[in-house]
Length: 351
Image (cartoon, rainbow, N blue to C red; front, top):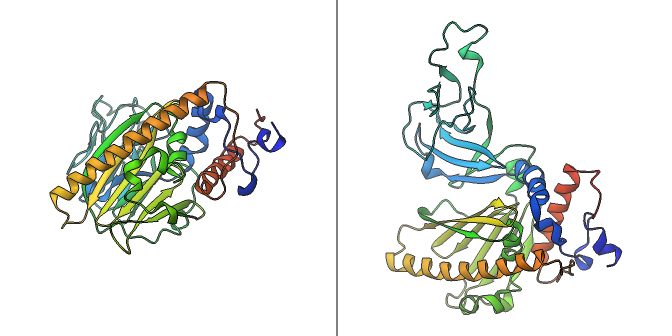
């Protein structure tokens, strides 16, 4: 293998770039690195605004293994509190909910205000050096944007910088349902697949009748990319596929928005949460057809991603060259990964 492929952690120009090596997709070392370098240091889609519209409404999420409780406070502020009691780590909520007046630990009943301040701790009165007012739940950063809620644990770009380049409107749609899939592949395999239309003609025969793949384009921004294609049956309309670093997708077609979040479950397994949103005038029959077609495409993607994961784990694969014209989104993603890995582990030895 030449030096360009061997120095996989170094920045690579698109015209000379190799894909990431197989070890980035395999084993606990790769999973641990991604938790620390990627997920703990990035904005994550954690809820939609309708879930937390009123005081006490709350939704559960997780970032890099940290359980979060997204909750609307009495002051109308949205917070991403750690769903971990300061007593002995019990959960404050076990499911999404509405109109809670307080957050009560399910283990020993310690009770918190909706802003995370401890209100009461049963049986702790008179305990030396214990002040209820000194205790509060840690919280992540939270932002509500166009009907979507994002949160972040660590060092992240300002949210305005993160979404720069995304001009589409998403707030005009109403949540319909969630459909989740599990795939026997590393989360990055799924993202790689999403970020290029190179595979569409071979993997998605139905989709090729919907999209004008000959006019498929990719536009890169600092923290996102946009794939776009004309829709054959709807003159002047385009399918817009927005990807936001590292694992969020916003798919916009006429009358429909679909958000995807890819959640690592293990080094070789992930879950893809599909949330469907529609305009209010979208008929039930159109929604049903959309769900059926999306499910077909998703099963095709999962099948090829699982085959790729097997190839990566086989010991046969060495990193291949990327197609600069059709895999610029993959290159962009890999460059952001390389940068995140270098910043988290600057002294790491190259394999």
